[in-house]
Image (cartoon, rainbow, N blue to C red; front, top):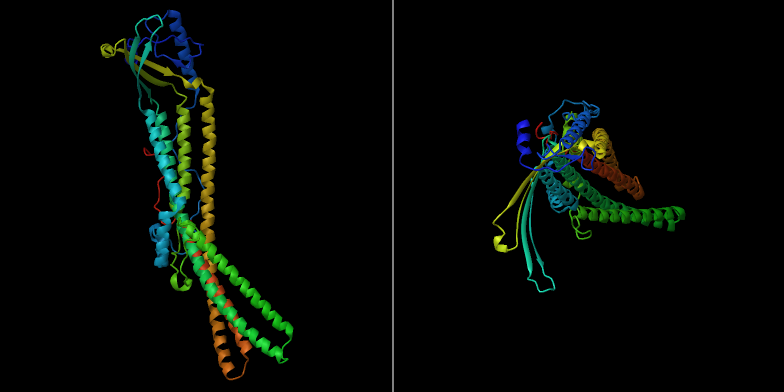
Length: 504
């Protein structure tokens, strides 16, 4: 190092800097040969003091470690034998519902959704910022030329002068400060990729549940139409009985009010169906009102996929939002390292070259060259040290945000498992209720033919059956949505991501 400094001493004539001057932060490597003895001593003392100050700064860089979080070894609602993450969720998990039309909707949404396109654009921005960070370690080259023309009013000839100059400035990344900035931006780039995956997973989940809701509404509308028709028949019987003095007018009015309620419910179902179509259109990037899902039946189109038991909690490492949160912890860790390294002296080399001439043809005949090495001691700048304190505070925010994301993920999985288990059990009870009411309805029909019961009793039984069938339909849609929510909560089949710097 001493030999290199000695060589630089004779290559450039360095400006004079006093120990307490305005430019004390940018002190030359060594004094020029023509500097006075006292000036050299002052510069040496200033350099010594600055080195001492920098030496007191904390510049220790620690290896990144994942923040500690609460550990969960199993799920309370799914305690069967564990399975591997690969066996749990397929990357195209929505195909497990075995509905080609759903597959088509998902493909169109992935291609046309604007939220996904925004997230993809942010990845491009982060990638460009990564290139910008890497450019910080490269030399900066400037070149320029000019000309001046002068003429007085005394009749003298036109005066001309031409010049050409170039300069190269290189801040040498001795301590790896720029590299730390590159690592920080690389972590942010990976975080934006995870954000895109989280948006992708959220989009597919929302498309699926909205589609299920639309099909459920279609079946509800069909059931509501049948219920309304039955109640119209009941009203006809009531009217006939009232005219024959067998029924009070109040019961007829009650039946008319029931029909009003059913019609109002029908209008609400159709309104909800139209809004769901609009929501699905927006998810696919289509103007609302320009797309409508063909009418269908949920229980006929969509099959319930099996959910493996014993899902391991380690599968949460696949969740994109958790991955993104940890990459931002890594980014904050690298920014702390960059802020600490920024306290150390930095060395820069500046090379200048140029030529000037009164005639354009003589411009390239002679050149002037110069080299100016310099060393900067930023440890004297209070802003640099304040930046270290700020970065250390920001990493605590990122760590707590990561822990919150993990704990929230545990709750989402637990809730999805609890809901799925409860709704499946409720589905069993509702299925039995429908079966029992179906038997009763068939027996009432037989008794009606034998004259044992009235038509009114049959209508009441069928109305109860329709109500139970609607409840079973809603339960089926809920189980499908719970399954989607579970797949989403478990990471949606994305691969496990190792969060670390490239060198680690």
